[in-house]
Structures are given as C-alpha cells and as structure tokens.
Image (cartoon, rainbow, N blue to C red):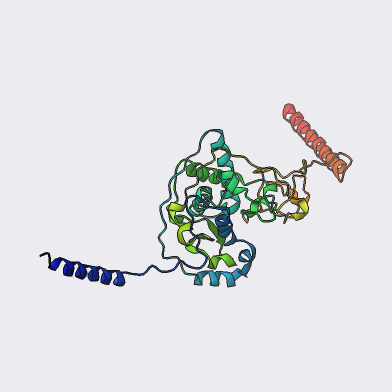
Amino acid sequence: MARLAPRMLAAAAALCAGFALSAPVPLPAPAGAVDAPAAMSVQQKRAIAALTQGRRAELVAKGDNARARNALIAVSHAPAEAMRSFTASGPAGATAQQCLAQAIYYEAGYEPEGGKRAVAQVVLNRMRHPAYPNSVCGVVYQGANDPVCQFSFTCDGSLSRRPSARAWAQAEDVARDALAGHVEGSVGSATHYHADYVVPRWAYSLGKVRQIGTHIFYRFNGGAGRARAFTQLYAGAERIPQLTRPVAEIRLAGGADPDTGQFENGLTVAPSSADRHAPADIGGRLDTTKGWKLELPAPSQGHYRQLVAGQADETRVAEVADTTAFTETEAQ
C-alpha cells in the first residue's frame, strides 16, 4: 500500500486536473459592467456614474424609430433578484413619502399601477446603492440644482404646476406602501428606466430587465447590479432642497407660481392628456402658465353694466307678471 500511495496520489491529481479543465469557464462581464464592493471608492462611484452620463446620456433615436430599436435590445438573462424591504416612519418617513410620491406622480402619474410601483422601487434601489445618495429625497432631487438632474421633473419646471388630485392620491398610496416594506419584485435591482419613445445611448451599456407601460427598466451589469451590492445604510434623515436653478435654464413645462414667483416643490405638475378645457377656459383646472387668472369683472369692465341692466329689466318684468297674476287670482 505504501508503494501504491504515490501512484494513487498522482492519479487523483490528474483526475482533478481533468475536472478543472472541463469545468465551465466564467464569461467576461458585459461591456459597461463595474463591480461594486461594499465600500466603494470615489473612483468606482465615478466609473458607475459615467455609464449613464456625458455622451452615454445622448438620445440616439426618438418616436417610432426608438420603439423599434428598443424592441431589438435583448432582455438580460440575469434573473430579477429579490431586494430587501425598506421601512421609514416618523418625520423623516413623512418627508420621504412626499419625495417618493413626487417621483411616482411626475414620472409615472398616468402609468399602470405596476409601473408606478416599479418607479418607486428604482428610487429605493438607488438609495441602497453606494453610488447614489443615502436618502429618498437625496435620490429624487440629485442634481436638481446642477447641470444634469437625475429625475427631469426636478429641473424642467414641472414642479410649478398643481397636480391632479386623483393621480396624486394614487402616487401617495404607492409611496406609502413602498415605505411600509412593499418590494416590487418585477424589476429586481433596476436603477434606471426610460420611456419607450426614446433610446438613450446608455441603454446598450446596462442590462435590460423588462418593460412596464411605457417605461423600460435596466440594471447595472456585473457585480454593481447584483442584490449584494446594495449595501448602503439609510441616512435616517430627509430634506427637500430649495430649487435654485435660474429660471432661464428651466425648460418650462410650466412656470413659477404667478403670485409668489417661486417654484414650490410638490404643488404643481406638467399637463395631463386628460385635461380638457377651451383655450381661454377659467373653469376646472386653471393653466397659470398661460397667464390665466381667476377673476370676476369689475363694474367698469366690458359689458358688465349692460348685463346688470338687462338682468334688472328682466327682474322687473318678472315681478310685474307675478303681481298681475296674484291680483287676478285675488279678484276671482
């Protein structure tokens, strides 16, 4: 047996080598993949941010052409991983709910419920990812006063218009559920999305997860997009920043409040396709961006005196008719 031992060891070594050679070789990470360890360096954060900034943020197609090109982008084979639930309560939770409701409303106010929940999940995923701010409001308002904002509604003037009550209530419900621990598993670890009528260049650098409504959701390739990379701790405090972007830089979907001249966060919204009103209608929702104001005419304006005089004449005629009818009835 002692003489056989070396031979047996050699045979075992050869067998193991054969297994090693026949084992599957890991494929290289897709283009744009960046690993994200628990503690990311500044350089690593910049590398991840660069995947969707600069030239990669340019649109390469719009409209029907974009829809056709989006359909050709293959869905990632990586399964949508289950993300950890998150809860927020107290004063910070209330502010977080407002910011999250804003993101849901302005980004997906008229999307199906699943689309609203998916947008909420993207915000919470970013909050947990080391490459992004560690609060809900920090994620939503990231870059709002910088040249590039992460959520366009915070810098394009959309916040200057009052929201539709029904759609806002739905957004609040979804935000409340998300901050009470609901996890939208359909999009997994997605951190990005775009409308299907555009194609940003970065769509070819990230992993396509799925489409819900008009939004297409994406995750980072490689370790940066795996659930284990979402290790950032919640700040525990929330703050809605004051918007200081110069009015001249705002691509006006609306405008400043006509009375205060300020952009009041969360009070306004871009127009809805459901809005119906005549060009100069002052009923229902008032479009203040067109300079409309709810006013009653002064006595010296327009045909006011004629209207009042006419109404007075009609009133006197009616009174005479009533008096005559009463007299005739009494006489009988």
